Image 1 (tube, rainbow, N blue to C red):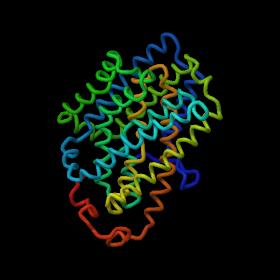
Image 2 (cartoon, rainbow, N blue to C red; image 1 turned 90 degrees about the horizontal axis):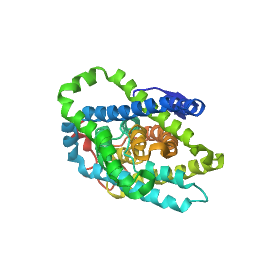
Image 3 (cartoon, rainbow, N blue to C red; image 1 turned 90 degrees about the vertical axis):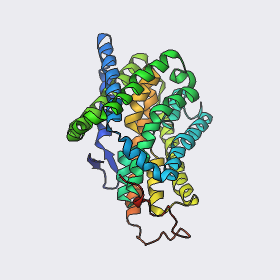
Image 4 (cartoon, rainbow, N blue to C red; image 1 turned 120 degrees about the vertical axis):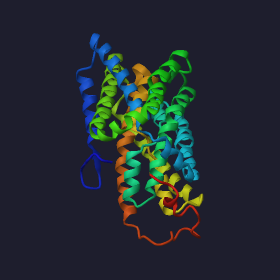
Length: 347
């Protein structure tokens, strides 16, 4: 990750962007967009979502993604964690309604289980822990690409009416706001890729500013609809506890499951960090398209989970970085073809 973090203490990072998101939520609570201002904010938010997915498409190197297929077992493992194991745990959370979670919070909890993995933080933590960084790059890219198609479909299938279902209007919004801009970015990449690379820092601010606008619009609509009157501090505490359990289960599954599948230490690190995390940058704009006026509660679990995963994975990465560096993983019976994948996967 290129952006800096604030530390309270050094092993407990607080992402500065999370602070900006919290500030945006507070602004929406105090000064929500209403009337004509809400219409303007809604239109700007729609344009921001389209711009985000255009930039996603323009930045994703198809050649690098295809080259990364050489390590297909690792990528399939990450995709299975992201789009099979996570959703199954999300479905199991229905048992927490109504005693632990409200139906609205449970829908948001399930939605966070459907979004793709992160790219930047997965790479950063894998690098800190001395894992397979090229594999983390490719795994995050595959997850993001797959999520653009699969997340809306899973949301429509598993969330039903809470995410708008499979109506023609919902499908048209997904195609126009997510898929068309992404494909346009991929098509124009050969012409705009150099410009995006040269202005990476400025466009990073555009990315984050667009997401802040999406958050402001979603929470303004939530304030206007009165959805926050149904959320109590006790429910928020219960949500945090449920997310802590979810994260712990996925961290254990990705680490020990990858070990049982025969992956070496470097691969297991990449699988753990890429397979246990969820992308706030991808999930927020998707939620605004799928949930409409109810997006504020839908994205709340994802926002909380995002910060939790950064804090926990930072601790794990630093502890893994202090592990001894043997020529061969002592936990493995032998050095198979999966033990040193960096030679077969390029970044």
